[in-house]
Length: 83
Image (cartoon, rainbow, N blue to C red; front, side, top):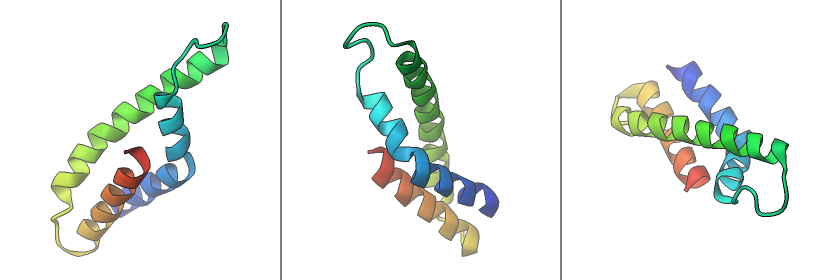
């Protein structure tokens, strides 16, 4: 569990802002940009998965000990990165 939380923290720290920016900016505003469209689709998929994990994390953050602490850290990071 702790390893999974640490991995999520790394993903959010390094790619969270990229995922958020790609999801928020519209596709097809200027011409045809296939790589942009692919990046948008991948970002939307990542965002959907992270939102599902966020729901799970918020339920598990009340667990005692280091596992609960790890869930709380990830939940806080998700909140600040994806909102």
